Amino acid sequence: MISMVGQSGDKVVFVTSNPNKVLEVRGSLGEYGITFEHLNLRYPEIQSDSLHQIASASARYLYRRLKCHLFVEDSGIFVDSLNGFPGPYSSYVQKTIGNPGILKLMESVPCRGSRFESVVAYIKSADDLHLFSGIVEGSISKKMKGKEWGFDPIFIPLGSTQTYAEMGIEAKQRLSHRRAAIERLAIWMTRKVSKR
Image 1: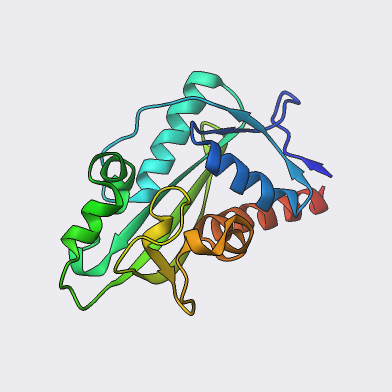
Image 2: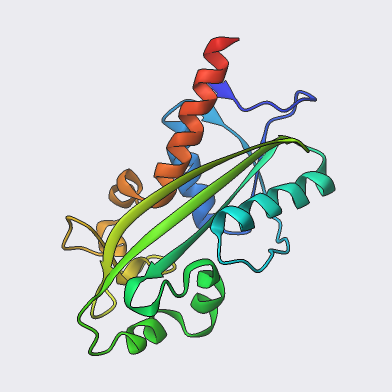
């Protein structure tokens, strides 16, 4: 078991107010024997077209405030025919127009290509920040299928006929964009530990 330990001996903290993210990240890191503490905290995010910039700024803000070893995750769905919308604004769009709104915008649109992106920002000190990203290509379904969270009911990953939501949590976790980013973090962490 690897405990992600900060400079003062405390476990690293995953900061998010989204319980679904905690479950997914705990499952993915758990496969590598990595544990962490969860802090349920909302925090301000900068406005940017780049998930990397948003995650980096959030991690730096939280580090200045909490003074501890931590990581954050930011993700979004990018729809090709909508010029990448909603992208970094996915959370806001989900809260306002939701999946029905995206499907409305996509009515009669033949090109339904899209991708989910995730960026994890891991910070140990003010000048020690690492970014890990994951991307899953796919398409937007023509109707909602399944009952999971976020955009899962309308996103069909490449090579599948099911939406993320139809797959169920375990099947989705094996190929999700968030898992890809978290796996890169886990591999980096285990390599660091093995070099000690």
